[in-house]
Structure formats: C-alpha cells, structure tokens
Image (cartoon, rainbow, N blue to C red; front, side, top):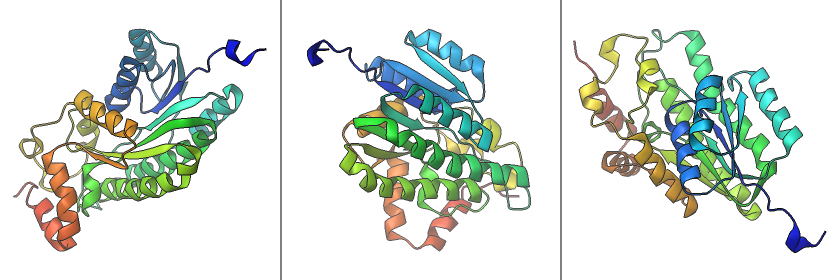
Amino acid sequence: MNETNAAPVKRVALITGASSGMGREFARRLVALGECDELWLVARRREPMEELGRELGVPARVVCADLASAEGLAALKNELAEATPALSWVISAAGFGVFGRFDEVSDEDVFKMIDLNVKGAVAVTRMAIPYISRGGHIVELGSGSVFCPLPNFNIYASSKAFILHYSRALREEVKHLGITCTVFCPGWVDTAFFSVADKEGDDVHKPPMEKRKPLLKADRCVRGAVRAALRGKALYTTNWYTKLEHLLSKLLPAPLLIAGWKSMQNKK
C-alpha cells in the first residue's frame, strides 16, 4: 500500500481514575482540544465511565480495574497487549488519601494508598510506555502536599512525594523516545477526594474545611496541566499558595514547614 494512502493512526489517551474528579476532567479536556481520537478509561466503576464516553462522543474503551490489586493491573496489561494502541497521552490520575494520625488510619487504607498511589501509578506507566508514540505525553498526578512532610496526612503526602521524584527522573529516561513527563501538583481541589480523606480519624488532626478554601475548580486545574504538558514542562503547580509551598520548601527547614502545616489543623 502506498504510504500516503495509509489510514491515519488513532491517537489514544489512556486515563486512570477516569470515573470522577481529575481523571474525568482530563478526558473532557483532551477531547475538547482534539488531542485524541479514542479514550481508554480506567477505573473501578463502569457506569460513570460509560456515561463519560457517551457525553464526549468519541470511541471509548472502558477498562474496569482496581489498580491497587495485582488482578486489576494484569487486566489492563492484557488489554494493552491485545490492542497495541498508539498512545498519545497517559494520564495517571487514580489515587486517594485519608487524614488521620498513624493509629487512626486503618491498615487497609494505609497499604491501599501505597498500592494505588505508588505501585499502581508506576505499574501503569511502565506498561504503557512501550505503546506511547513519539511526541506523546505522560502526566502523573502529584499533589501540593509533596513539598512538605505532613503529620496526620503522612502516607498520602509521602506517596505523592514519591510520584514527584519518580516523574522528574522518568522525564529524563524517556526523553530520547520523544516522550514528555509532567508531574501535576494541585492544591485543594473541589472533587470527591474529601469524602474519602475525611472518613477516618479525629477532627483535631484535619485542616478544617474553611482553611482548605477557596477550593480550586478541577476543570481549570486540568486545563493548566494539559497546557503545561504540551509545553513539555516538568512540573505544574496550580495557584499562588501551592507555588509558595514549592518555593518555601527550597528555603526553609522541614520543622518550620511542618509547624506551618500543623497550624492549619483543628485545635481542641
């Protein structure tokens, strides 16, 4: 077949955590920009992903998988091997956090945060890289919490600090493939995150909601993250206080940063 008559390669965006929150907004944004011809939506809940595919009006492959489990990771890996998609975007947005002191957060939640936020993110990225086309983009969802050790939010913040360093190093490793890697570190965002994060622990060990406001809009944050990825940026932070946290983490010792965080928490 003459090369000029060959069918164009479908550009596929693989998005984890696609049933809600940031993952859903990434799907909307990439379709709106014409950055993909097909979506791969990955999360545990099928119905919201199917609704999202219908809403966006592009071909959408729904992969129901718990990425904190070996079975869920294997299911996604098998789908990739069978379909061999030409990935233009890999968005790793699956994750969760729980507030609470070490003896308040359950073992189940502690190890699931590590399995999903760290192991799941790394596993998905590693299995996806062989399918990413030159010029493609990886976006890893970090957090504004990566810039400071956070007592009573320790496991989540530490898992996202891992993602920060992993992403910055991975960026250098995939550069020769023509792939960019951007770590996206938002502040407090108006999503369902808090319905899980606040479920355990004494309220004394949580920042009150009034100190988390104004909550950022997820769609606006994602617009900035996609723009940063298209520009090949290594790191994207969302607003003035997250940018300030990033700056202060370079200037101040950890005990001062921790004291600032603790001042946000409830007092008895």
